[in-house]
Amino acid sequence: MTQDPILLEWIERAIHGDAEAFEEIYYTYKDDVYTACMRMLGNAAEAEDAAQEVFVRLLRVLPRYDVARASFRTWLLTITTNYCYDMLRKRRGGELSMDDEDNEAVTVTLRSSDPTPEQAALSNEFHARVQQMLDRLSPDDRQMIVLRYWFDHGYEEIAEATGQTVSAVKSRLFRARQRLADLLGDTPLPDEGD
Image (cartoon, rainbow, N blue to C red):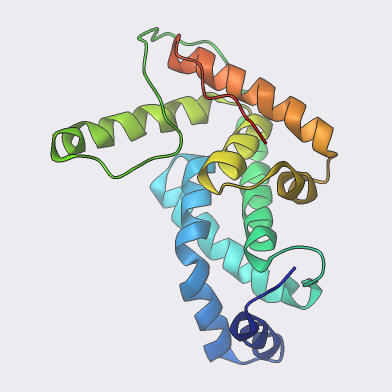
């Protein structure tokens, strides 16, 4: 796996206490980390706090990064989703209700594209609805959906990030997609082809 040499230099310098190098890492990945936190936690204030905590933790665990095992982005997003997963388990006692008191059908495309001007007004409402449904998934299911659809991780990357086999990831992702589709209405999510 080929890594950006500049990134590897930043990592090496940050490990040895170079604050500027760590800032470069922070500014390069802060949006990805915040997005993952927001999708996992569903609350902007909690997502900001979680993102900050992820970077605090990153500073401590950076020496453990193994360039041969995973891309840095995958490794960092694994730290992020695992931290959020732990927060969700603590917050909700490990159990979430799957009942949907609102049965309106919603068409969903998890891979977003730029909206037309007419769609822009509906975009915030749509994303809020998707986030509501993500909030109702179990932390395990939410982690699968976020890693796959928001960060386009392949099955192998998700397996490495979660410590599971590829077949277990495929099975969990299938069930997570079914649960999300049930919550969103009658419109099924797209089938996976990879």
